[in-house]
Amino acid sequence: MSLIDSHAHLDDRRFDDDRDRVIRGAYEGGVKKIINIGHDLPSSGSSVQLAEKYPFIYATVGIHPHDAKNVPGDYLQQLEVYLQHPKVLAVGEIGLDYYYDFSPRDRQKEVFVEQLRLAERKNMPVVIHLRDAYGDFLDIMKEEGPPAAGGVMHCYSGSWELAQACLKMGFYISFAGPVTFKNAVKLKEVAKKVPLERMLVETDCPYLTPVPHRGKRNQPLYVQYVAEEIAKLKDLSVAEVSKALLDNTLKVFRISEGGGEAGP
Image (cartoon, rainbow, N blue to C red; front, side, top):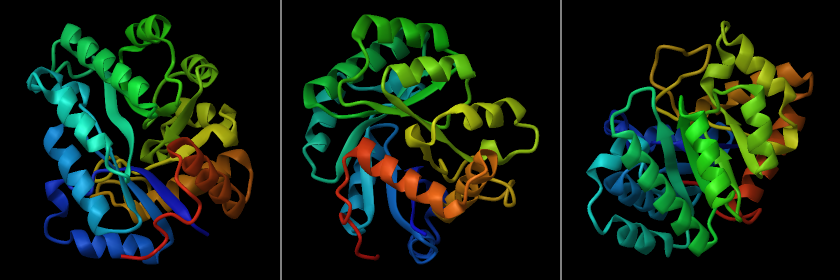
């Protein structure tokens, strides 16, 4: 069984003491590819560095809505340089977050739209972070049009109705640790309904650790528990679900089947 962690933050300082061990352990445990996600300019750069160091790690680059207020005037040009790297797969994570409102909402929308247009110019998929901003997200999608290269709704937490709208726009729906939580009844129902061929799994490590390790630091190896929960919800074998999730991730991020297969 081979798995992909489609959304990790291995450059986070919480991995500073044992990053190499965690990465090797994930690979040896069956996680054959990891996509490390940029959320600001420094993390975009460190994601590229990780992708250069480890053959089976890839990167995305982008500005998270929390960081929209801090971007320099030339941030798009800096992202564009990163996008030329052969192991950078997408623009992300980008989007809107009105739950924390760490950046002013108008600025979040501006930076989101600017990055959507960058992705469109470069024919790159996008990784979307969306929380409590569903109306504005749909308005922007209506105005800008869904990205031609597609994308991923990362760590999905919305309704089935929103999921249907995202699926119609060509997005894949990615599930993380919260789908394993006992009280996540609505999220489990959404996961049952999303077609397997349009689904990804992720850890978002070091955050959102799945059961049975909830409360500890998350890591790519734990993506197996998310895959197992999806298999349980869909009444399918873990092997069948894992194969579909692998194929889906390769497709949306346009990774060749054998690309990056060498170990750490």
